[in-house]
Amino acid sequence: MNKIVIKPKSMGTFTLNCPFTNEKLDNDNNSFEIYEGAGNYLFSMCEDCLFYDAGNNNEIEKYWKNSAFEAVEKFLENHKEDNILIIEVQKNDESYFYGFLNEDNLELSEQEIERRFIKQL
Image 1 (cartoon, rainbow, N blue to C red):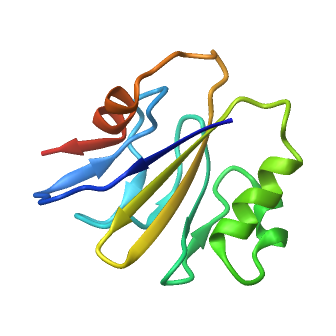
Image 2 (cartoon, rainbow, N blue to C red):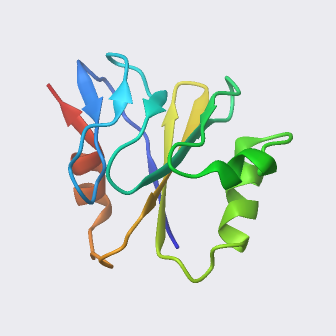
C-alpha cells in the first residue's frame, strides 16, 4: 500500500484521471466527487460530506460506518497482498480518499501521481 496526500492550492478547471491508465473518471467540473470510475479505480470517499462511490468494488460499502478514513483502513487490512494506492486530497475543510489498484507495480513519485490524477484544463 502506498498513500500520498495532495493539498491543492488555487485550482482552475480540472479533471480527475486514473494515475495508472490515464482514463478519465466521471466527475462534475471542479468537483472531487467521483460518480463512476475507470481504469484501476476502486473507490472514492469524502470524509466531510459523507459521499462515497464503491466504484468497481462493492466491498468497501460494508465498512462505511462512521468515517471514510476508518472504512479505508478496514478495506486495506483485508487487501494487504494487493498493491493499492490511496490518494488523500485535502481541499479547504474537506478530505477525499481515492483507491487505485497498482496492478503493474509502477514506481511513480508523489509529484507524478498528482500530475496524472489532477489534470488542469
